[in-house]
Every structure is written in structure tokens, then in C-alpha cells.
Length: 98
Image (cartoon, rainbow, N blue to C red; front, top):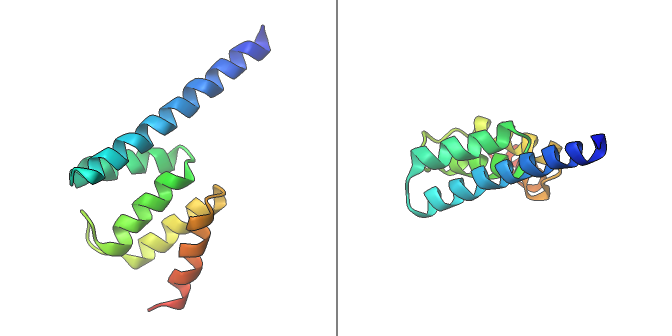
């Protein structure tokens, strides 16, 4: 019984992460930047590397926020630690550019 409860909790948590990420992508597509930032931040804070990557992209390019390459690099590092390989690539590139 304990194992099935644990699996149910993991399943619910994974669905929540995916929902925030999906909401962020939809908001970004619709140019609702405040909503996208909120959803990607939630996703990132919950350990979703893709959420961190997307938020980092917004900061790097100044989409919906003031451009902040340092913040972007920090988010890329967080994405990389969460095993998001594009975060690792972007982090490495951010160290190479002014």
C-alpha cells in the first residue's frame, strides 16, 4: 500500500510540473509574458530543467523582462543541474560571450 501511495504522489507532482510548463509555453506563444514568466518560474522552482531553460531564454533575450544575461546564465546552470542538456549548452555559451 505504501508503494502505491508514493507512486501516486510522484505522478501528481509530475503532472503539476508539466502543467506549469505547458501553461508557460502557451502564454509565451500568446505573448502573455507575465503569465509565461510566472509559469516558467514555478516550473523551474519545482526542479523542471525545461522551465529554467525557457525562463533563461526570456532573460537572455529580454522577452517580457529586462534583459539580464547574468540571470539567464544562472537559470541555464540550474537547468543543467536538472539534466536539461540545452541548459548546459546555453550556460557554456553564456560564459563565452560578453
